[in-house]
Length: 96
Image (tube, rainbow, N blue to C red):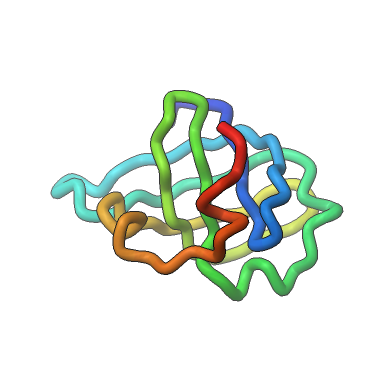
């Protein structure tokens, strides 16, 4: 797994800078990985919703949280699912 930087966008538009590592399944249908960094200020109820993550390279990912703590979050993601989501306005208009 290669490590890259990016930011998690919360439902209110708050951006949390994090590092991520992800791998794709052989058929490319899903990603799984981990976000690493300080998540101690994130309300755990955020993880009940789809999460938006924007990598420094510009990839937009819709994530589903699997496990989490103050220092990491494991996730799964469908690479094609971001365009199909109805995101709150704050998520769509975050600074980039």
